[in-house]
Image (cartoon, rainbow, N blue to C red; front, top):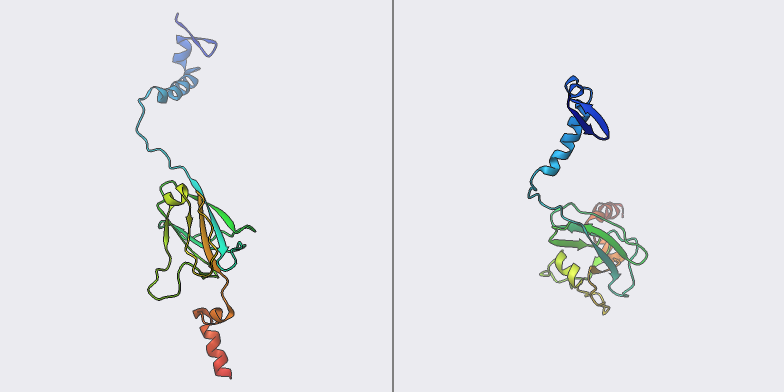
Length: 181
């Protein structure tokens, strides 16, 4: 009679044929089979990197806290993370991301000087942000900080009441007030 030693137990060929130990033996065998297979060329998962976005007031240079800047990573949907008291927010970016676009939520941009031919919604290279850091243009004041690797500095300023009044979402209200006067 043949006797096998399996996981510290003596197993006879008669036992294997009757199925008493067959199920655990097959389960263990199948569990070790993937170790014997040749390695496959599977793509490695892209690791996430984090970028710090710092939002500063273009006139004063002070941090803008509780700002929900509009951020797009490549063609992904927009996200609106809120900045903390230091005006920073850390966002996770997929390793395959190429560009990042940012615009203010309720504030006025300082990247452009108000001329009609200036570009709106500039995109920034993720590789450049990670390697050297990026500081956006500031046409609202003289404050400018030095770039830091992994940090995107974005300048904005609060909108004035006149600018808020002239926005399109107030047009129905202005029409009603003109009709009443």
